[in-house]
Image 1 (tube, each protein chain N blue to C red):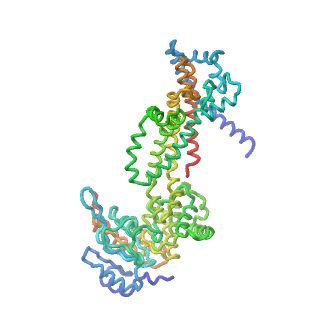
Image 2: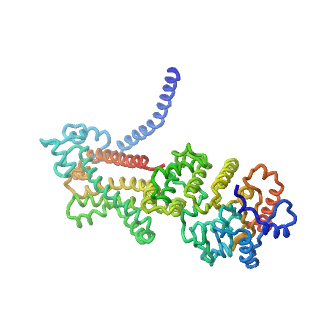
Image 3: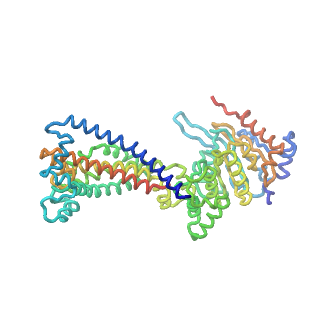
Length: 314
Length: 292
C-alpha cells in the first residue's frame, strides 16, 4: 500500500519526540496556533520539509465575520490549514465553533472575509464539483431514484459522454457502497444509512479532488455508523481521495483520520491543535481499540474539548 | 391459499367494509334529515320548505327543466340547442340543469386554464427572482382579496361584451392563489436541493426540470385547488350580472326574477355538487402528478 506520503517523516519524529515524552509508541504533533504566536511560516516550513508535493488544499489566514444588528460577529479568525493530496482530515469542535462555516468556505458556499482558500493553487470562488459535498441531511432529491440521483451528478460533470458510460459509472459507484440492488428505489423508501450511502456514492461518482463531509454519520444509529465508517475508509483506501470531514465523534475521527483538527471555541474560533493519528493503515477497528495509544489520543482530545476549551453553556 | 381461507377473508373484509360504511354514511344522512326538518319548520309562503320543493319539482307545469337535467324545452333541434348553449354560450336559456352547468363549466375551463398557465409561469418567475418578488408580492396580496363581483363592472367596461368579461372575471379571480402558491413553493425549495444544484453546477434547464418543478408541484396544486373553487365561485357571480347567457348562474338569477325559489334551491344542489367534483378532481390530479 502506498502509505508513505501520509506517515510522519523523520523530521516530524524528532521534533515531536522531544516535546512529547509521555507517549510511547507514537508521535504526536501538536501545533499550537495561538494566534500570531506560531506564525504560519513555521508550520509551512515543517510541512515543506515533510512533503515535497505542494498541498492540495490551503486555508490561509482565513477569517469570517458576519455583520449582525449588534455589530460584527467574528466566527473564525486566522485559520490556517494545509491538506496534502490523499489526506483524510477530520475537524472536531463544539457546536457553534464555525466548523461548518469553515467547510462552506472550502466548498465555496461562503467566502472568507479575509484570507484565502486555495485548491490546487486556485482560489475557491464558488461551489463546484471538484469539491463535492456530502450534506448533513443527505440532500438527495426525493423524486429521483438512487440511480437517477447519482446520474444527475455524473451527467452534470460529464455532459458529453455517452449515456452507457455515465450509467456504468453510476452503477459502479452504487455497487461500491453496496446498494446495487437499491438503484431503482427512491429516497423515501431507503433507510437513513442507505440514503447516506447514496449520497456518498453520488459524491464519489464525480471523482472530486476534495470530498467534503459535514457530519455525515451524525443521524445514524451506532451500528450503521460503524459500518459506514468502515466502508468510507475502504473506499478512501482504494480511491485515494482527499477528505475533509466534520464530526462530533472523537472515536470516529481517531478511526478515520490522518490528522484531527481541533477547533477552539467561538466566537473568533481557530485551529487550536492538530493531532497526528499514527495508526497504520489499513486500519482495523478492533486492533485500534486495543491499542493503549488510542486511549491516550482519545483522552488528549477529550481534555482539549472538555477542559481546555470547555463549552460554557450559560 | 385454500378457497376456504379466501372466502373467510372476504367475509371478514365485507364485514369491515359494512361497518365502515355504517360509521361514515349514517351520521351525514341523519344530519341532512335533521337539517330538512329545521328547514321545513322555518319555511314560509315565500320561502318553500323541502316538501314544497319536491312537489314543485315533480309538478307537470314547472318540472321538466328541474327534474330532467338533459331537458331541452320547445326547441326542435335538440343537439343544435345543446351545442349553442355549451359550446357557443348562446341561445335558449330554458334547458336542463346539466346542460346549464356544462355551459358554465366551459367558461370556467377557459378562464381557469389561462389563470393556471399564466399563474404558474408568473409564480415561478416571481419565486426565483427576489427583486420581482419584493416588488410584486404586495400587489398580489392586495389584488388577491378583491372579491370576484368587484371585477365584473371593470371587466364589462373594459371588454364591452358579456362572454369575454365573464372569462376575464374567472381568470382574475382564480389566478392569485395559483400565482402566490407557486411563488411560495419556489421560495420553499429546501436549501439542500439548491446547494446540490450549485455544487454540481446544474444547467438552468436541468435545475428547472429536476429540482424546481418537482419541488414546487405540491404547492402549485394547492394553488390550483383553491383556484378552481374560486373560479366556480366567480362564474356564478359573473353570470348573475351578465344576463341572457345559458348558464347555471344566470339560471339562478332568472328564477329569482320570476320569484321561483324552488329552481334556485335545486340549482344550488347542482352548483355544490359541481364545485365538490371540481375540487376533488384537481386534488386527485395533484396526487397523481406529485412526485415521491
